Amino acid sequence: MKTNILVQYQGGGYDGCFWEWNYFYIDKQGTFHDIQSSGRAGIDNKQDAEQFIRQDKNKTYIYDMNNEQDIITFSNESHPVHVSGVLQWFEDNPDTGIKFFVVCSECKCHIDSDELVLDENKLFCDECYTTGFCSCCESYVGETEIVQVDAGEHYGHDYICVDCKEYHDEERETESLEDLRWQAFCTGKPDMFSGKLREERLSTGELPKLLASSIRECEKALERAIIKAEPQQADEPERTG
Ligand SMILES: [Zn+2]
Ligand SMILES: [Zn+2]
Image (cartoon, rainbow, N blue to C red):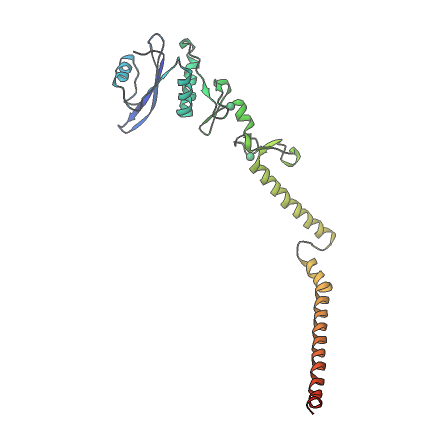
């Protein structure tokens, strides 16, 4: 039998229906270690483990712990909660001599549980998580979504996500508009935002002048037309006569 292998298989099987990933480890000396076993399909001893491996079932994954690439594959392709659980198991069992690690989903660096952050079913190293975390909305958004801002305008945060920034900016805009209205109200000055000023400008300003001059133009044009038309009729008999 192969040794120093991590085996991921479908355990569980409560009520014959549900399965879940289970794990065991066969160390370099061939000793069986039950990392996680559950339900009727769970394997908790070496005999069953050997028999199981011989059956070569589908949906069973065997990772060679001598091979760094196998550990990377396990970390990338398995459920992050399980990955961190298996990492914890290896750290709790240092006798195995395995330097187990998980892979940061962002920078792909190899991390142990001291620097591991599990969030929203993703694994991050401390550094990636910190640089991609918005302390304002308290969620991981990724480094590219984080911008540096003026802490005075953003509730004391120096770095926040673009969504939070946008929200604060809009909030401030609304506030300053309200401030202006309040100031106008208090000082009795015309409210520039009510449209009253615009109306005033219309009643005293250019539009009536423009209308008046247009009317005058029309009147003049009409007069000219009448003057022109009258002598024409008077001249006609002279030309023909
Ligand atoms: Zn990272
Ligand atoms: Zn945010």
